Image (cartoon, rainbow, N blue to C red; front, side):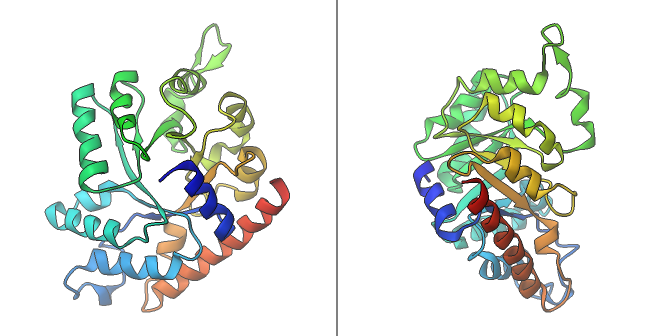
Length: 272
């Protein structure tokens, strides 16, 4: 998917919502467990209920790999079921030496046909650029995450304390790609740092997890992170897909997605 196509979807749906398909078979409604493929059936109903309100879906690979070959089959069926106009993110956090990254890129872009993949930058340029060899595909580089341990490395002072490590990741990696094929992960619980991040990467899209169950503020993310093209994909996972554990789980998921979309519409009107 091209940048122009993604922006068109944001404008059309008046939304920058990404729904995280962190599908845990241990948390899904009990009545689905008797179906032939509970994971896919859960995802299918979630997609049917939320597709009108979101512009992206983000399956986290760990939830599928944990179920072995069955989980990976469910993932492939899920990707094929998602409407083609909706952006897909493989939340896989890959990053290895160049030839291995090339194989990861082949797996996720050629075989599974994801639009994008999350990538860890720790091993440097040659571990990232193989993912950028595909037209219409995106790398979403981990920059500033919302987990507790992020401060162990990402917030370290470097260059005589003139900058943080995550800022150097942004400055260096922006040379590897463009705003047409490179996005960054920035946790919503770090919204106060979005102003500084936008000074370094003003035009790139940001994937922002942490809104909802993790306590991030959508209002702050929009205020400090939005650019002239919106430039945001804000993810909510548990707050949407586990809004109910009963027979009405898909209905409740749709309601929660619609609430976020309506709030996003307000911010798009204000800040664009």
